[in-house]
Length: 145
Image (tube, rainbow, N blue to C red; front, side):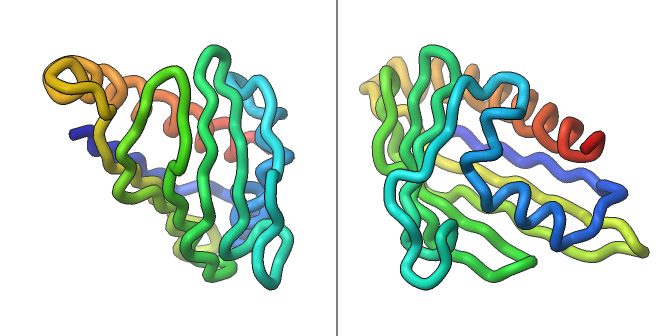
């Protein structure tokens, strides 16, 4: 199982950061994201609850469904489809909290790569390490915008 946990305090407004992470179409401006698009709008807001997003990370493609949309504090998602690696995703969550004029961002992702033996023994550990680096990089890039 992989367990990604990245936390940063960013000198940006909580509303600005929530909108930045909710608007999947803006992800393509982040280094490492080839393209990103909204496949299905949310139930009551375009990027909100129920929205289906597709993110291309070079050779990897991930489709994720928004499962919690509590503006500006929490944005949860579950990976529904992925290729070339199949995921069993348990939780994806971006949590924001105001902190002395700044915003504390906590990004969590838990699951496993669904390949018998190889996923649990090798790929999950690699994905966890790379995921922590990638999410950390995304938060650093967000702090510079």
